[in-house]
Amino acid sequence: MKKYYSIAWIICSAFSFAQQTISFENNEGFNTGNINGQAGWISTPTGGQPENVGNQMISADKASDGSRSLKIVKEPTYGTQPDPIIGGFYNLPTPLAYNNFSVSFDINMSQVSGSVFGFQGVNNTNDAIVARIDFDKTGVIKIMNMVSGILDLVSMPEIWSPNIWYRFKVVGTASDIRYYLNNTLIYTGSAASTLNIDQLRFVHNNTLGSAYIDNIKINTELVMGVKDSQETHKILSLYPNPATDFIYINSLDKIKGVEIYDASGKQMKTEMNDNKINVKGFLPGFYLINIQTERKKITEKVIIK
Image (cartoon, rainbow, N blue to C red; front, top):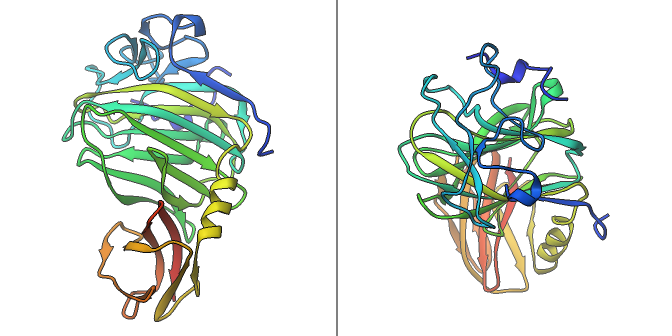
């Protein structure tokens, strides 16, 4: 199969915002059957004949909102792909600014040890991914981030389970891109590309199992992230950053627990006394700190030098 990144000919302020909701219902212009050609959606281009894969469907099997959802499932004509590239693509009528957008959706996957399912916000015109989430076949959630000029998929501590609806949200702000699982911030990183998003892709790597996508909400102006950031900094801050030997947590709430993960997703052994974290012996680099307070779970990015 020809990689879809090269296909350039596909169908071409915090207080006020434009929002689009897609639940794949009749009143939105959708009918059960192949998603290709419906309401601005296509299925993965093949680079040959037929022009698009044929089994990515609007289905009444499961739904989190209304009675229908997008079902992405194995295409028997093609083998396993090296990346999640098969599924349903939405060509946005108005591109999203990479630094001022919000996209959320519900996802329900049938099994682990099957396909890798995922979401990608891309600039299709320039073959560039801006934001990407993979639900790996091992149950691990991976998020694409730009670290020191290199794109990498970073493993999260959160695990997904089959046949459960999850709510996922990606928010682009002026300073970063934030990823939320069930309304909890799980990662803050950098945009993989600073181009605007003109296509949303819900995809898999064509192995086993199926996933259902529903209740997509697309905001063309930022409605989340700024408030979240302000509230976080009111109740908690870390210093110094970059750090060498110790990181201090200044928090209005009682700290119930702290976990530190390196850029590969490996959990580090952590010692904390009186809101002071010992990071002596940590290799220089980028780390995520998950802090559980009495009110919420907060994720912060730190650099150890």
